[in-house]
Amino acid sequence: MTGPVLSIENLTAYYGDFQALFGVDLALQQGQALAIIGANGAGKSTLMRAITGILPSPRDAIRLNGQPIGHLSAPEVLEAGISMVPEGRRLFPSLSVEENLLIGAHVRTGSRYWTLDGIYDLFPILAERRHNPGTALSGGQQQMVAIGRALMSNPDVLLCDEISLGLAPVVIRDIYASFPKIRESGASVIVVEQDIGQALKIADHVCCMMEGRVTLSGAPDALSRDAIHDAYFGVSA
Amino acid sequence: MIWLDTIVQGILLGGLYALFAAGLSLVFGIMRLVNLAHGDLIVLAAFLILTIVSALGLNPFLGALLAMPVMFGAGWLLQTYVLNRVLGDDILPPLLVTFGLSVVIQNGLLEGFSADSQKLSAGPIEAASLPLGPVTVGVMPLLTLISAILVIFALNQLFYRTRLGRAFRATSDDAVTAGLMGIRPRNVFAIATGVAMVVATIAALYLGMRANFDPTIGPARLIYAFEAVIIGGLGSLWGTLAGGIVIGVAQALGAAVNPEWQILSGHIAFILVLLVRPRGLFPRAND
Image 1 (spheres, rainbow over the protein chains, first blue to last red):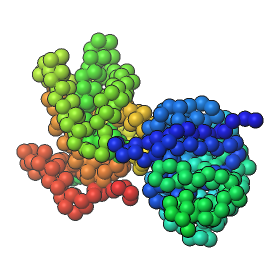
Image 2: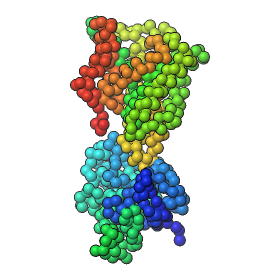
Image 3: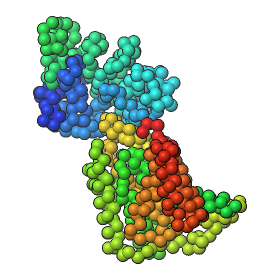
Image 4: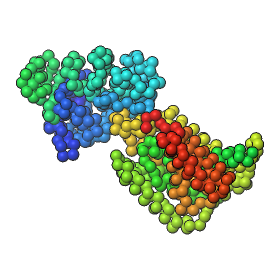
């Protein structure tokens, strides 16, 4: 059996003197969808920032396919095979929809699964809007661009940070409907969500975080509602 | 007819100011860096061309061609080892560093070349002119304007038609997210400053062929460049060309009334545009 595609061991992270993560352990298996849930301030986004190299981490605390990547910068982490859909989408206002997607392919990887046409198949509305400025689209369409942009580098691991934030339920459902196709490409996925219901629907494995620590971990079916509630809020239901 | 002639001469002069300003506009547009040493870097490029021309006995145009890669390298090194270290949320450190650089360049050039005025000799083309409808224009001013248009056109193509240009714009929008796309903002900045120095070399070529220059004239060129960039709208390259032309025409008209008013007229035009359009004539939508 092969090891996990992404493994995190005893990860700590700091903002200046403030410690935001306390010895986080995680393992993402090949092809798996992992949901990380937790309330505001639980450390989910800090974990994403640490994995993507925005926040410095100890070298060996994060490994991709067995190789240490904790010390790498954000561009180097992308080249190693991890891309992210950042919270708030963060599209480039000066770039059109198509250019936003193309900038995702700034670093070319060996795999060619995701191309512009592939993204337009996944989200047909983007093909119609390809020449519009990315930020002129609706929130849901912007999220599609952000997901497409992250896929264009053909990552081994796709990180999605709060992709349902600020979107209408029907739009969230449409966006999550694209995940089976994304997983068909072979990418393993980590979804960070406050919306527990959505996260549990697509995940094979769930981690709940609170105050910078993983407080619960397991398969969604194996975890009771109460256990998740306790781990999420830190109090018994 | 004399007014038409004056306006045409002003437009042609505007080409030179646009060349002074294009590099400044490029650097500001990408990294929000105001390079106070830009004028001095143009003068440095002029001395570099002079040195090459004197040593190898070349035509100034060929000399500039050889100086371009050298200036690109100088810009790349300057950005990588100096300016990247001071870029951040606080705009004061880069201002102070480029101000210091301006003093260093001026004094370095004074040491190396003395305070004597220099000129790049281009031969008979300097005095050549050709009739253009009812007015006669100098070949050299016409070449300057054509070069300015070509430079701005090329920079626009680079910005909007190439992979590097996409990286320029993405980094300008949001350097952190650009990093998540595999773009190294500091490398992008270094290339941008290198390109700006190539444009500064073209500006230096025409500066040196059209008038005398000495190590201390950089700051005045910087002011014209600033005014052109601000009149045009920060970060807009075609706006920068328009800004240069506004200053050129204002100076030519002022000089036609009274030669003492030439420089003053350009500055007054700048203030008037600012009063009417505080964000310049062609501001970028997302600034």
